[in-house]
Length: 199
Image (cartoon, rainbow, N blue to C red; front, side, top):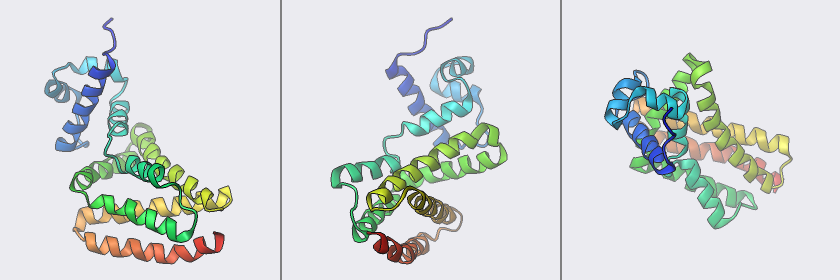
């Protein structure tokens, strides 16, 4: 039985998987051409990563430029917001990162993962749930720091996460990024009075 790759080799494979999927999409992903592109057999890919879905999940999770990683860095560098105004500034900074061309280029893949999770919930459902949970958990911790009880913080975080995902995915079809940005600021206008009442 072959030995698992060393961490550097494993990481290189996952980086290659992510780059391949970004170029070719997820819908028709087949392990054999993927393996050929990476210089490894499809059987070895399964040996190293278990399943195609787990491999995709790991490849996405390790992407250093993921917006959720950047949002965590913002919190670590600036501290968690302590009032509604600070929370709004933080959320606006999080939103602005989606104008980065590198970040925007990855969004179609997340749309594919979302679609696949609906069509094949047993295979891709856990991948999408992990993505949403990361954002919801991050925002929940921010709302808790603002003084909300856990149930309300979780609800506010779910609202913000779900609405933001919709605002980010719609422009992939119609190209109206300016309208999505205006809608995001309107969302914050709607929610901010409730945050002020908590702080």
